[in-house]
Amino acid sequence: MQVAPYLNFKGNCAEAFRFYEKCFGGKIEMMMTHADAPPEMNNPAWKDMIMHVRLNVKGQIIMGSDAPGDYYKQPQGWHVSLSVDSASEAERIYKELSEGGNVTMPLQQTFWSQKFAMLNDRFGIPWMINFEGR
Image (cartoon, rainbow, N blue to C red):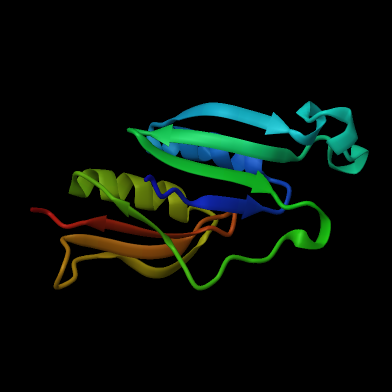
């Protein structure tokens, strides 16, 4: 079994996943729009919206799509947690994800971690960044 976050966006999924691909050093393995779907499933109003995207980050998968119309709901009650390999990687990712976003806990040392932060990125996705330093 593999557990993978599936993120929903309000029309900016492609932009977000291109940013995540660069920020996390991953590879978008597939990205399809509603226009790529069979004609009977295709809603012309949604043709440019992302139906499904899959990002591979060192064997870890993050997926997502645009939520058409009124289906979009602002994320709340959860975070995507990133465990990184170094303090410098925590600092770099924090800087990139927080740009244009909303920091709820700045990157800092805690009793459980050398570097920890919580934020919502500019796309509204909530993240936790953690470097335990062990």
